[in-house]
Length: 274
Figure: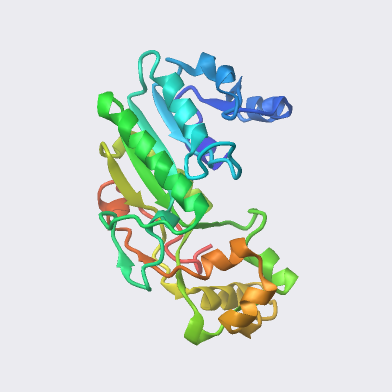
């Protein structure tokens, strides 16, 4: 709903939802709901020619009956939008995970993607589908988004601290990247109006921390005990594969395009400015 707050009163807003139960919530926020399911292509027919500008936030499905590296949700959506007049501009929220492990190097947008996890490979597939869609008219921009944080966001660092999840010792630790949720919403809007065709943007703040140091800082800010530091071998025994995957990749995103081309002035330049 953060995007809604920024756009309310400026444009007519519509949102695709697969849950009829969300209709009252969307209407209360000033959004016209459109019921449809990206996993059921036939339900998307009414979207054709409906939008002049599009923000695509839906993640790929976690399970597939076909090719596991494909994002069939994005493919279905783009096929529907191709039937009639296409949007003027499209913004797709991808993930910085498409870069894969960069061994702590600073990463600019022209770096060749090398996704290592299935979810990142599906995101890269979605990027390719979006770029192909943009070859015939729409101005398609790709926003590569790292970890999102906000005080009201569930499943964040604070919950991991409450669960007692460990982090890596300094010698095994990795660099991580973040963006505050309101700044992400503003970046999406900037992409809609200012994004260049076929252009990718790293959407992150100016924080430069390793993952363990980040959790130490969050713990200090909330008056909580700092997490245990363990070796990578011990972490492999205690943490899920999905959590471990974030500890296997180290990169430092460069956000210069975000600031100069999308002209976004971060309201939360670092995680200390919450």
